[in-house]
Image (cartoon, rainbow, N blue to C red; front, side):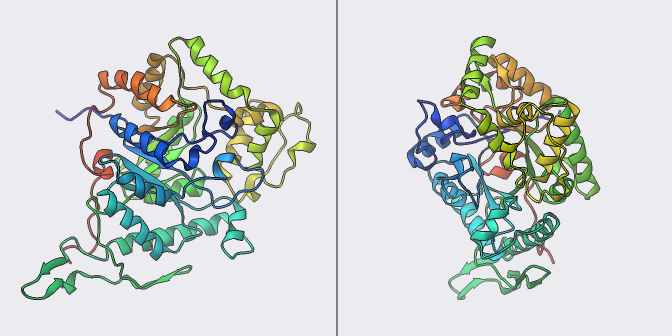
Length: 438
């Protein structure tokens, strides 16, 4: 009898929270994003709860309108290397840009982190949507949307190729015969492309899981195709089960069309659980978080997706403006989504700002209700698991202590880790070295 399918769960370190105003709550430490001891505590707690991984996002540019969380934060690859030393099973997914890194350097850093952790690293391969990032990397102009994805494919091909520099039995360490490695099992990539020329070889061998797990978060048509061809984990932001089912079916279909099995990629919607002993208590927690969000703050969130629009000059109570997102070279999929929903539901600018600048309401309620909703999403093909973002201090612990036991009792989540590697715990196959047996 085949084992019952179980959901996979990622989480995040709370820091100062995932909404721009959460740092104002009295119980939030304003320096939480750079409090290493707090990161250690939360990582070790996540491991005790048997989460699959902690996810670290990143920004390569900020200005005075950016969310405070991006103004003072650890660089992801640095912090995951440190946290891997104080954990033994928990995975770590770090965001790194294909637009503003060199493949050789990133391949070496990621594989080093994967070796240090014993095979517990994932790479969230992003193309960098923020145009201002160009100014920090000696460029006057950001890459276009299509160019970013063309560059990303080339970058990823090189990184994966470099990770296969050494076959798994290349190092023989034969002291008697003065033979450190087998030259026949060392491979030089010698890649020449449109954006990169990389000779190789890479001076670090494959990890226990072969290669870091590839994550991706693009939601545009180009992004979904790129993810279906390359990703093993996909992070997405979706409000409702019907919307999740459409996205899930679309990406799985594209994955099969790319010549892969639909089981080769796992989809993780982000979720914000507000948990209460009663429905009222849960909604009181939700309303407290929302109470810190002003209209000005909510509109500022929209600026991220519509950079050339001065919302302060528009009537908040007028219908959400007509936009063409073809010129949106940043978060195009999110801009498309905002316009589609605002138009379909006939939302005003103010309603739209609060709709997309406030926490989602899908997972607000008692532990049983939240577990029910998670089960529905999982069993009705809306996801393969979730990326759980605690929306208030102590939320991670509350979720682990009140919701996870319900999921475990229902056989929907593990009671112990299945493997020592991230790839093993996610149920993903070990990638064969492309040169093996040739």
